[in-house]
Amino acid sequence: DTAVSQTPKYLVTQMGNDKSIKCEQNLGHDTMYWYKQDSKKFLKIMFSYNNKELIINETVPNRFSPKSPDKAHLNLHINSLELGDSAVYFCASSRAASGAFYEQYFGPGTRLTVT
Amino acid sequence: AQSVTQPDIHITVSEGASLELRCNYSYGATPYLFWYVQSPGQGLQLLLKYFSGDTLVQGIKGFEAEFKRSQSSFNLRKPSVHWSDAAEYFCAVGPSNTDKLIFGTGTRLQVFP
Image (cartoon, rainbow over all chains, first blue to last red; front, side, top):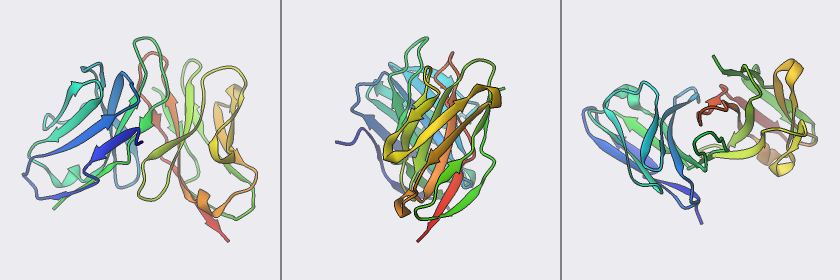
């Protein structure tokens, strides 16, 4: 049983295209996240959602739009892809709730390559 | 601002040797501290965490870490490294008021037979 899953694992696309990455967790967690890992392996949070509500939005371009249809899913849609969007995108989840902090569990990542 | 520093970008050890990976953090109060491992082409796996209590925490795969408040450190150790431990290791700190994780830049571990 995969706790946090992402699709696709690899995504190669051209500049200007629009693409989506899907994430699902079966851990029953309330909070989900998107992280970006750049070519130097640096990890930075992009968004977090708690029970379908946006909690963190870390100065990410408007071209990136997260969508959470329910608390088990958090998808990432990217418009007008640019070369600089090439990275590995990780989804994560935790049982974090207001005033409480817990460890985060990560998915396998989606390697996005923009040509 | 909260930050995490991993001073060693790349470490090479022989199989069977002991290992210590350094992590220093900057945070005003008691942080929540984590070590994650990322094998090539894989996601991040949680090795261990420190929230409070005993400052020496045990994790999976034979790893342990010690929280030293006076040194603002949370170093990861393993007494005998296996070839399968070759990976990228990330230290992270979680501020207590939000659910944001701040990661260090990672240490790449190479293991020679």
